[in-house]
Every structure is written in structure tokens, then in C-alpha cells.
Length: 276
Image (cartoon, rainbow, N blue to C red; front, top):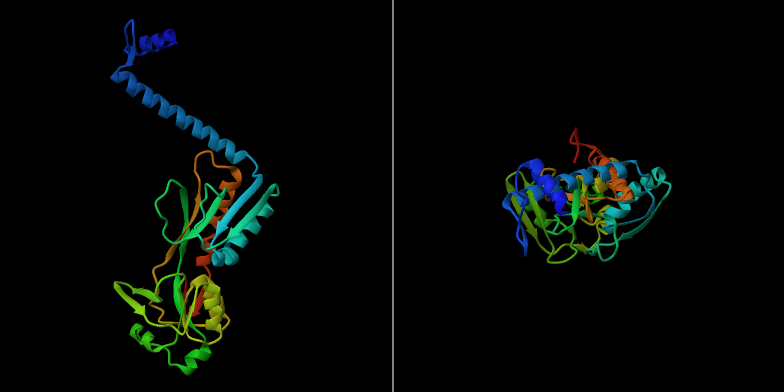
């Protein structure tokens, strides 16, 4: 080893180690050389791994978790398409609204809607979910549609409140309004909120990808189109981007490719085409 270091020093024309009869110590030049060389080797190793993972066929079990509503309405479709393209992969899903510990529970990919908390996990943003206010035509025949956000206080509201006091924070450009009142119905599930709105029980706030199909069929109408909650980001969360398993990379790539389809679901509102 000493001879190898000596040859490197002769080549560089610089001392990398201070030597004495009792000890060795790294010079400042030697430390800088080591750190730069280690970074180069790590980059080369990562490049080789990336190429290898791209040409490897996805295989094995893929464990995916997502929120119950988003999972059953969106992630199911991504999984079906991925399994058709990757015949050697099997998928295990857990759709739950609890925060899953990815590392300790052995999850490969978590699809999360909303802001992410700080962590050592890696994440790839897939897009955003837009929201709107909706009611059935039957309800709007019985209660005149609101012309201003303040008029929501006189309407029957259906609120999705997983925890905390029922309220909506709605934005319209620079304006922000907080609607806090006792709703006609309180639910902890978005699908339940949708079903109650379809039954004519009041105004509801829903993800647009979930509501607009019913608008198109005439079962729901959008109200106060300029007002809605701030869009929620959607991320694919996984353990690490380094040495990413081909099945994980393949599924995340597919999700990122397919997510914009949500935003392309359009409906004619007020004579114009709207997208999320």
C-alpha cells in the first residue's frame, strides 16, 4: 500500500501523507485529493447502476400504499397498467388514510396527497389535485345558487373533516375566506361526501377529477367556480433514488406519466372548457 501511495505522489508531484516512524497523517492536499477521487468513483458507480437498472426487467413483489379514496379512484388504474407491462411483478396494496411507515413496514412506494413532512425519504412530485365546490341540480333548485362566497353561510354544506373543526379555507386569487359553521353533514371520506351531494343534501368541496365526470353527466353543477381550496400536491415517496429497484422505478415513472391525465379531464362550464 505504501508503494502504491508513493507512486501516486510521484505522479502528482505532491505529498499525500506525512510519515514518521510512529504514525501517518493525511496532508491537506491528500485529504482534498481523496474527497475528489471518492466523489468521482461514486458518480461512476451510480452511472453504472443506473444503466444496469434501466436494462433490467422489473420482477418481484411491489408493495404500494395510498390513501383510500385516491387509491381506489386513481392508483388502481396505474397498477393495472403496470402489471400488464411487467408480467414478472406482483403487487401488494394497502389503501389507508393513516401515515404508513415506509421503512419499517416494507413499503416500496407510497402515493401521498398533500404537503410532505420533512424526512430522509426520497419523493417525486407527480402533479397536483385541484378542487371545486359542487351541488346537485335538485339542491340548487331548492336553494338559489350562491353568487358570493359569503352566501355559503346560508346553505347546507357537506364537509369532509378527517379531524378537527369543520371548516373550509377557500381562495380566489389574492382573496382568502374561511368558512366555519356547523354543516348539514360531516364525513371522513371523500366518496361519502360525493354520494351525499349526489343525493341533493347540499354543497360539497371535491377533487375535480372525482366531480367533473358527474358534472358532465348532469348530476352535479359547479358553484362559485372562482373559489376553491389550494391545490394539493401529489408525490410518489420511496426509500432512495440510489440503486432504485427496476420495479419501483418503473411504477413511479408510469405514475408520473399517467398523472397528467387527471388534469386533462375537462368539462364545459359556462360555455368554456376548464381543466384542473
